Image 1: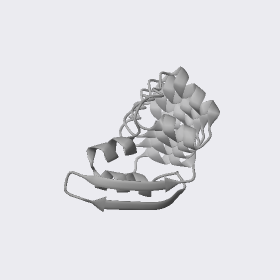
Image 2 (image 1 turned 30 degrees about the vertical axis):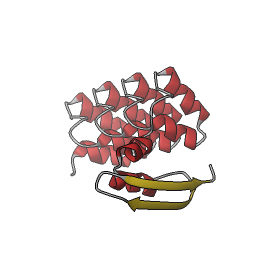
Image 3 (image 1 turned 45 degrees about the horizontal axis):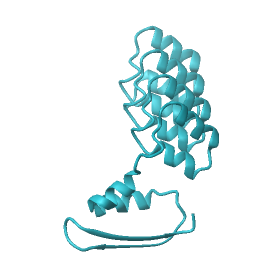
Image 4 (image 1 turned 60 degrees about the vertical axis):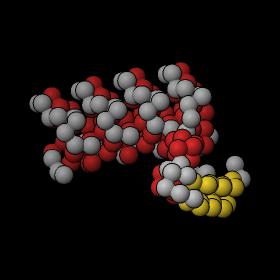
Amino acid sequence: MFDVLSEAVRRGESTIVKLLLENRADPNKFDVLSEAVRRGESTIVKLLLENRADPNKFDVLSEAVRRGESTIVKLLLENRADPNKFDVLSEAVRRGKSTIVKLLLENRADPNKESTITFSIKKGSSRHVLVHIQNSTFPIKSVTLNILSMNKTHCHMDSNV
C-alpha cells in the first residue's frame, strides 16, 4: 500500500514525516514503524512513537534486535514494546548483542521464557518447527524431522553452537 507517510518514511525524510504527523497522518495505518526500523531511522522511529505508533502491532522489536539497532531497541522499550512477545532475548543472545541483552533484561525480558521452537517441538507442531528451522540463525549441521503422526513430531538437531 502507498500513502504519503509511508513514502516519507521510505525516503528517510524526517522533516516531512514530522509535518505529516502534525497534520494527523495515522502512524498505525500502514506498517510505517517497521519500515523505519528496517531502515535504521531512529529519528523517524522516535517521531512515530511520539505520535502513538503501536510498538507491539508488528514484530518491530525483533527486527531492531536482528539488525543490532540498540538505539531503536531502547526507544521501542521506552514506548511499551513487550520484550516477551517474541523471542527477542534469544535472538539478541544468538547474535552476541550484549548491549541489547542488557536493555531487554532491564525492561523485564524473561530469561526463563521458553523459545517458540522449543514450544513447537513440545507441542508436536512439525510445520512450525520447520518454519523455525528455516528461519533460524543457529548454524544447524543436520536436521531430521520425521512426522510420526498428526500430533507427534520427532526432531533431531545437531548444532555447533
